[in-house]
Image (tube, rainbow, N blue to C red; front, side, top):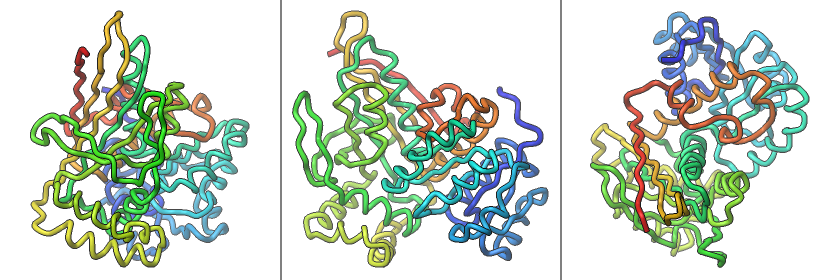
Length: 371
């Protein structure tokens, strides 16, 4: 087991949100509550949350106020984990100025591009700025890279996520996801490429039990491009769906009716998401398991094979928190060798991340199928 840092100070911005709460609990588990710094614009909420982490510290921060951000972030911090949405990377720029590694779990495409534009400045400053640093995207990309490394020649990658309809993902997270589903996606099949509506093309995937065989839809996430660029493989497709075929059919119906694209509008999207989220949560059991699969098609030892890496986790946000905290700890321990702005797959390997997480709740398996 990797030793735990004794004096790490990890600042969780958005500590009171759904993702932030999970990240705070994970900082306390992986490190200790003395390593946790709660960051919230509602200081009373942070004080109430602090009752669960008596040794934690609190800092008031308003993500939309550059002065507040500059006051809250200083070199005494080991790392910052961003669990709130931003339009522009003001937090990342403050981290650059103060020399503090920054880990962001966003899936928002335009924001990701703005963070990546800081790559040159981050390299010069010797500071890691990780984006897409959760479970999906994030850990999922490392799974794809790992599966590809088991082949002598890679022809294609398929990355799949089976989500839980019982998940505690709130309206905000659901609205972001639905907005992503509404985007057109490039379906890469052999040497052919064609634009198709998001969440329309279907494919089946075989997960470990109890999920078994699930039907998923093709979707467009920025992570697909980062995988394709790193592996120099053109055929990379990302797929997702829920563990309920009826909920998948509901999303498909919303797409056909033209409602799915309305989620892109923040105001309308949140209203719609509250309705869809209520439907999703009907009959919640309290358990919200998820699973991911990375399939690498190609050649190994002269044979045509498919290498499969599968991962099971207790929940979406739980696995996101585990991943984000592990990325933060690795960024701190590796120092300037992880300098730059990018996806975690640029800096880390799957095995070392799972060693740092050190949780029996993440179950990884590897299989091979001959073609």
